[in-house]
Image (cartoon, rainbow, N blue to C red; front, side):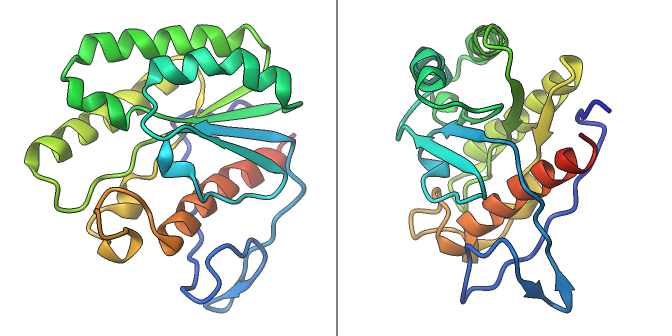
Length: 200
């Protein structure tokens, strides 16, 4: 079975007291995590504190799409991963170069495909109280990236609604997820990996 943006994945809730638990009873439900394939998560500072079973996280603060693309060969030589999840694009929107950004994503995809890995893209999270332009550009990026992933039959993890109007998920800067926010992002990724595991 091929996963694409046409599928929506359930998202677990995490408690404030233990935000990085991946197997826990929450609100009467048990979130059961099956063994995941070795996975590399690579991205900007948003993924710094992501923790998911059987994954390695490589974080490059301030990275843009082209920066991540240049790191891919070294990272995949370093890590023996079956799946790669990329979270990037937020730092590109300030450049206001939409067509260049789209081209950079296409170049990144070409690089990733050359390594024969399963590829997933984690969508951006909205910033909290950072102005209408930032919100508009991140919304446009999320919608475009979702459609782009569907075009190329790639898995897309939609994080936007999870973080929308949730100040308790952010640090004081309104940009980076705090412990609870990082747990929610980790949970979104965990859910998709779990769904993929169940059908392989």
